[in-house]
Each structure stands twice: as structure tokens, then as C-alpha cells.
Image 1: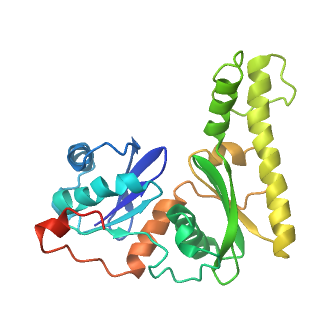
Image 2: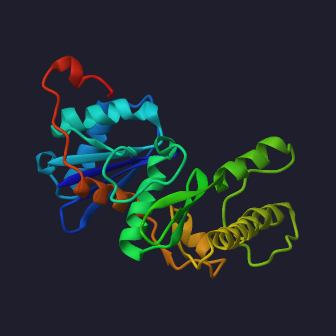
Length: 269
């Protein structure tokens, strides 16, 4: 079985694939201070509840945009599952070209989304990922990654609004039925929700115009279903696209071997 680890700025998602289906999917708040043993104890309990024994995990893959978290995640794979993790990097075999000025600077999550989206939906397309940042990533008809857009995420915008304006409360995310709010909270909810819908629709239109051909739009991330309700721009909603990208990347690349010496075993790279 394959253990997939997607470490984002807000959450780390652990999932297990048995070669045919996903067997489990668990989420933990991201913390660079959390040790490999803390991960291991927590994850072992969840695996057991899903009917999976630790020794059934034979390979591991990590995608992370949080470099500080990689050290303990790698140790988790080595010490708890006796497997050297494949770490998603631009230098691996992705099966497509990365047509940017600095391929190594592209976040692993964005490349993983591109890989899975083209595999399942075929390009040309754009992936909109509702994460800590809201990203737009463009894939051409051959599957090549050609670039995209990074904008502030929904939760970041809500927190910034609350922190910067003394009388504005912290609000939750929801779809208001009316655009014109009759009080402060409904007005803020409308600004966040319909403001993001306007941004999504506007940017997708501009991307398509610059690309010069129609593009499928694929929504991913935990908030994708909520925001897809407010627009007809999306071709598909796939909340777990990044996990699927990690699975496909692991299938394309040979699993790395565990280091033989103890000193190398404890290194981060």
C-alpha cells in the first residue's frame, strides 16, 4: 500500500491507496514543531481503525509547500513504515514539461494538481485550488504546465479584514442568498463570497483570452464545492486532486532506497 502525505500551509492530509482504491483520508493541522513520533502514534491509531496495519504500507510519497515540516515527515516514513519517501520536486519524472522561468520555484501542490487534472480531464485546462492561497494553474493540450496566478486565500482575506478593521468581526464562510447585505455580517459574507466569485470568473475569462483557446476549469481544495455553487465556470469539482497527483507521481517514479548509514538516515535531504 502507498501512504500519501500532502503537507500544506494549513493542514497535512494523510491518505492510503491500496493499488485499487483509497482506503482512508485523515487531516491534521500543520505544525513544523510536531515530531515524527507524534505523527506516528496519531496515524497508527487511525490506520488500525481503518483495518490497515503499519507493515502493509510498502511505499510513501510526500508533497509539501512547508519545507520545515519535511524533516519529521521523512523520519515518520523511515522509522514507522521502513520506507524512504519519494518527495515531490520539479526534478522528478512528471511526464510533462514545466514551461516556467524557474521550474524549481513552482510549488509541488501546483504541479501535482496539473498532473492529476490532465490525467483525468485532459488539457487544455486551468486548475483553481482553494487553499491557504487561491491558485490558478494552466495546463496546455499536451499536459505541459505553463504558469498561473497566486492570490490570497479566502480564510486569509477574512482574517485580514477582521484584524485591520477594529469593528468588523471574524466571520464564517457561507453563500449569501442576497448580494446586498442588510447588516455588517451579511455584508461581509457577501463581499467575501461574491467577491471571490467575481475574481474567479474574471480571472478565468482573462486567462482564457490570453491562452487563446477554450479551457476546462477544474476546482479543487476543501472549499471548491461551496464556491462552485456560485458560478457555472467549472467543468468539474475534484476536492482531492492533489492526493491523486501524489499517487500518479509515485507510480511514475522509482521508490528511493532507505539510506544505509545512521547519520544519513537522520538528514533532511
